[in-house]
Image (tube, one colour):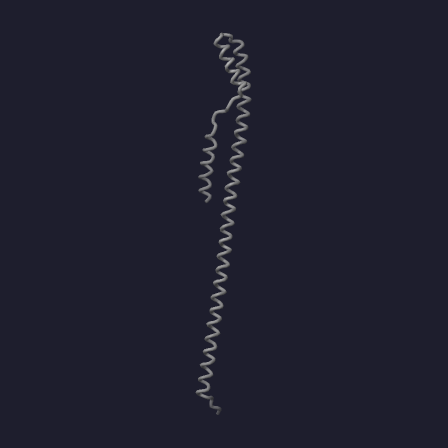
Length: 145
């Protein structure tokens, strides 16, 4: 069971990490990049450099936000996965415990039934032996010396 969970965990992490590898940048950043391209094509390099600096700062900020959100999302998904597996494990343990208790009860009932059967057979044999003893005693009375 643990090995299965480990394999599922690895698969789960691969699937999560494969999702959304590229950040979605803000429209403001994309706008700055377009302005930068237009300024560079217009050969206004000083202004393009200023816009590029603003865009780089904004990109770093967007990237940081995206990484933080992504990490929070991954952490939440991992927590949900762990919680789900814990619930599965609890349900399995409960089912095992219920089956063990049912099996124990069944064994107890079987033991009681067999014990009662033994007592009945023993009582029947004791009664037969007593009758046989009485019959023999009547047939061969004791001689008193």
